[in-house]
Amino acid sequence: MLEAGKEVRLISNRDLTSYRKLCRWDYKDDYHDAAALAYCGWLNINNPSAFLSLKTPEINATYQLFLEHERINRELKPIVNRARNLLHTEFPEAKKSKTESSDKVDGIWLFISNKPQHPGWRKRWLRIVTNSIGTARNSGFSSQLVKLSDQIVRLKKRRIEIRKRFKQFLANPNYQFYNEAFEQFGLGIYDRIIILCQVHPFEQCLDSEGKELRKIKPRKFGKSGKPITKRVGLNRFHACLGKAIKPWESGKKKGHIVTGSVLARIQLYLWARRTMAMSPPKHPKPRVKFLRDRYVTDIQAKLTKDGKIDPNYPGNDSLKQ
Image (cartoon, rainbow, N blue to C red; front, side, top):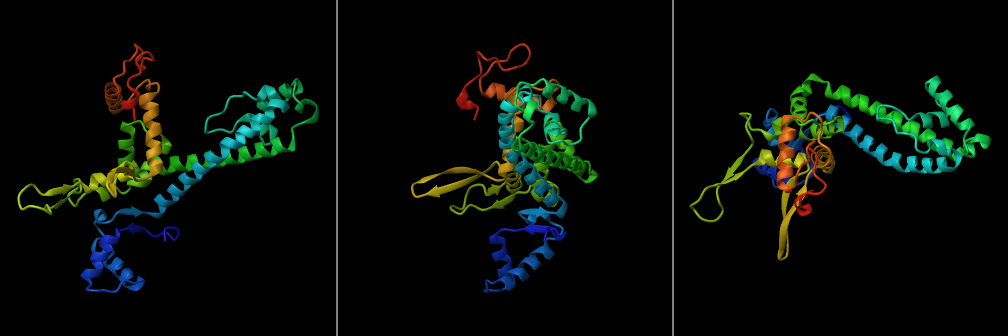
């Protein structure tokens, strides 16, 4: 349905059973479920918090692009490693050439695959390969290396196209509210994309008054005591970020596991590692500085004069998890 340009809203099986009972149906088949879902959608058409999540065609298309970007990254690494191993014998002078940023294709792969590139760079590579000690000087590049270089160029160009589409997507005024929040934490493009695809629309975590969605239920045992407050909105938000805590029980054992979006959890971990564990940003955002100070205090580490974690006092490893 998303591919057909339709918005998709998800509800839980428990809610589906409740709406089926409201219709006074005991039948559990596709026809009655479809009618119950239609009734649920009509009743809560302007209440996003009544659904587990909402997926629009634009968000789904962007999410699929993110999955493609992740697949390209997984494919690129072994291909580049094999190509650089071949460079060791064919063109050793270029084996340690610097890798370009994600917005460009490395000149060495353009040169080997005979793809268009800046004339100055092409002359430079021709001059180096003419004086090379590798086999490419006399025999040229092997067909295997040329094929690998062609694959690298194709994948990197596709990755550049996806990055441009991500920038266009984030520039949409409809997502200004989300970008303002992302800016406070200094999130990168890919961090913003995966989190936005998960939390949009944010109204699914809020009630009709724009406050955190909560459900108050009486206690099952005992007449006295405070009722139970379930922070549904906060739990949904944590699930979108891949940090939802879900209890489990098996026989005499019980505990909690972390559930939710794995991709969002990975991106958040990488962001935290860049901003907290590694070298701090030169001009950190106030919220990032506050979080990093808390992190350093929690792991009982010490900082050097330039603001980096002192290698002699890195803190307690058991507290870094």
